[in-house]
Image (cartoon, rainbow, N blue to C red; front, side, top):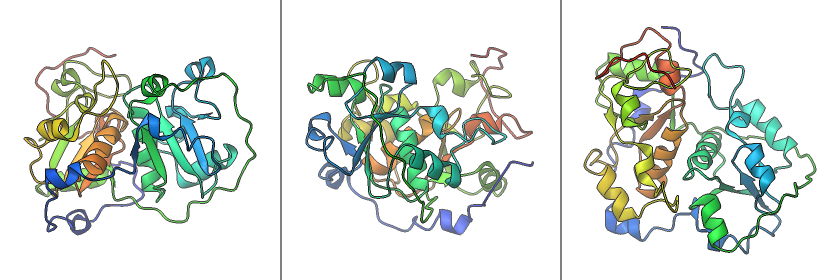
Length: 311
């Protein structure tokens, strides 16, 4: 196997948090989630200096109407186009260049929103977290919540002066690469791997463009990322009580080593956000390459139905 790797995750580091005590659901319910903010709460922030609103929708959607002063980024803007696998996160240097071009400073707090149940927002949150940037807020419910709260969208694109954004330290504690995951499987290390794609993708019945074959990583369990939000209505995250009912039966120990993946690390970034920021799980890593990378190498896979159907 020759998966591209910049570092290997030491097994001891991966399990370092396993001895910590669990947080109770009761205490979590009282926690103030600093990374998740309601639309009604940002009214006093968006006009202030030091806050940058980021619209994470395709440009045509942004152009049709967006929150005043919001800048626009789409998924491809925060991907590494030079990587051998599709959809990998930007390098440190490329992210510094992008943020400098967009006029973002190191002192800014970013307010993120999208129209996909915070999936795109969570992807950027996860990338920034890996680079030690924790001054991000995700608007619960995104576009629909903002409109419901009475915000008026406009089509004016802000003009911002370029800056010199610098990443001073990296913090890849929620990240794992394919070589490290393969090593853990080879060593039969006790981990829980969560496939956050659709049931049809998990079973092998459907496959998305970019993957080499259909199926799943061996031993994976399935929890569709979209279960965590009211996807067909408000697009908001479900309550803590509802989230506990979804995840606790499969992941009862909040300190156990958990690896999440999807097709290209976007939906699994959302699940990483839910588990770590909302439910208090302490040892969760998102496999950035996910199925797009894994399925294009000679690696073990499982499937329930073998298919040639690609979407």
